[in-house]
Image (cartoon, rainbow, N blue to C red; front, side, top):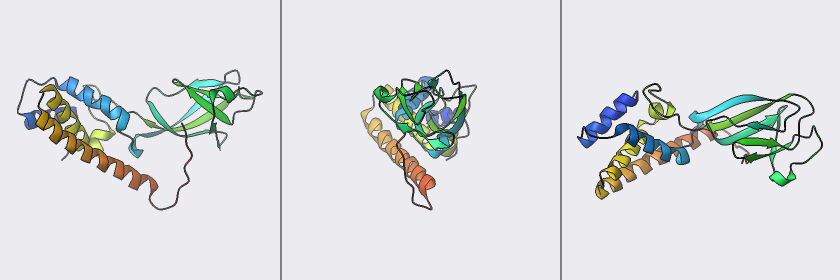
Length: 195
């Protein structure tokens, strides 16, 4: 099954439900809200370099930040610490804490510096202006069954909720397996907890 864009997704949902009165934009948005907490895949990884001035001990996370993978200063990984442990002499930047949507470094850098961040981003919402995203392109069944589950909830159809919930769970399991297989194949990895 290939769904190239949001219009094809809407058409497929209408075909499955044989209804023309669905609030499709709402159903898609509700499905995407659920995806925000469960979908993590290597295709959503991003790399950014963030300038941090010597006068600042913190910087904002990217707006689409979901979960961190790596945070480095001068090619050295930073260690997660308690916010209470982050009071050191200026220039000591080997630890950090996340406070809300901000990364707080152990102290102000000794000079202007650049932080390298690799993170999982949220699934970009489908809209008329943003017709597709990596999840719809690579895993259209996740979107289809996610929206159909929202339809079943909207229609108050318990049988379809069960059916579409099972299909969505299978699609999400396949996505998770693909992430694990594609991210970790070939060698033994050592992981470092980001947050």
